[in-house]
Length: 184
Image (tube, rainbow, N blue to C red):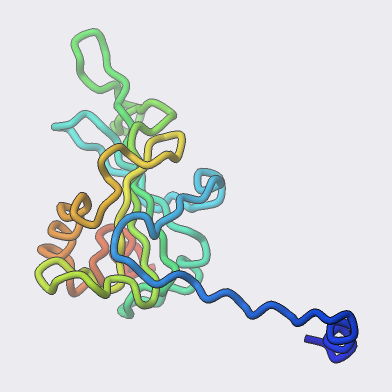
């Protein structure tokens, strides 16, 4: 604080308030806050058509993480990956409609947003059988409210188990790790 401001506060009989420490880390999806501007600010780096479920999964990453990511290295703290599930548009027989490239056409609004976010110090407090480094997971509705019943660390166990079982050497990330490490 500037000396003149401190002097003025002391003369007035006030003392500057100490900086508030962040709340202690508690494992669980409530650590993740979905940015309101994610759909316009985040970058779509991959899309996958799921034939069995008749959905399109579109993957997004925050631009800061993309800029800081280095091939072969763990993904940077602050990485936020969004998996937006969209329903495929269907014909009269219930088959997905396809564009000229053969890809599913999909409804513009996702019906589910699954998020994976990495921050230094996150992950502490999880048992070794599910800990995914410093990653947390959360699920949101299209209006960015939390999906009902998905607000505890236990509710996210399937996310931890899937990523732990398949991708520990790729920093527990699927498509974004592959995207960063793809030859250009």
